[in-house]
Amino acid sequence: MKKAVIIVAGGKGLRMGSDLPKQFIPIGGKPILMHTIEAFYHHDPDMQIVVVLPLAHQDYWKNLCTQYDFRIPLTIANGGETRFHSVKNGLAKVDADVELIGVHDGVRPFVSDEVIEKCYRAAEVFGAALPVIDLVDTLRHVPEQETPDGATLHSATVPRSHYKLVQTPQVFCSGLLRKAYSQEYTNAFTDDASVVEAMGHEVALVAGNRQNIKVTTLFDLIVGEAIIKSKIGQQ
Image (cartoon, rainbow, N blue to C red):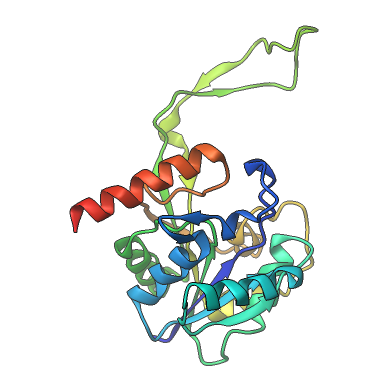
């Protein structure tokens, strides 16, 4: 089946404390976004890649591609007011004959080839699929109640086996995703799966990879550099 991926890269880098948008911050010798694009290109060189960038960042991206001699073929779409609108803009750039469409965070550069494969295969069977990983920390439910000193009372432990951490790529049959994004936007749309589920379609869960972190903080950058060094050491 013909495949595409929409890579959403609209971050502003605020949690990094940096003026440079986080998708452009170098890690392992080149910008994070380039690592992310390479993961999908190396998985399937024939996959259509659509990168969603704010209009104000597009000239900077073109300069980076020249600087790093980055030549992977891709299509640029304009970022929107929200992630929902950004994905919708990306969908408009996906070829009409594409049958499976993935949506991936631009700052998740360490998704494994195996996870990409599993997500697309599951979407082919079930129509919609996303990768998840288990929680390792104890999870507590916190009511909306605080003491004057900022502490929270009356919290309770909940069974972590009932919860999963969601990653990307989230992959869907093309017709399903296009129909889902024809809906009016609501604040309940937190990711692509929630948009599809709003139409009553269930989403299959597949095992993700723990290295598939979303690089949003300085700590994540440190972890990311360690991941890259470990990969180099394994080669």
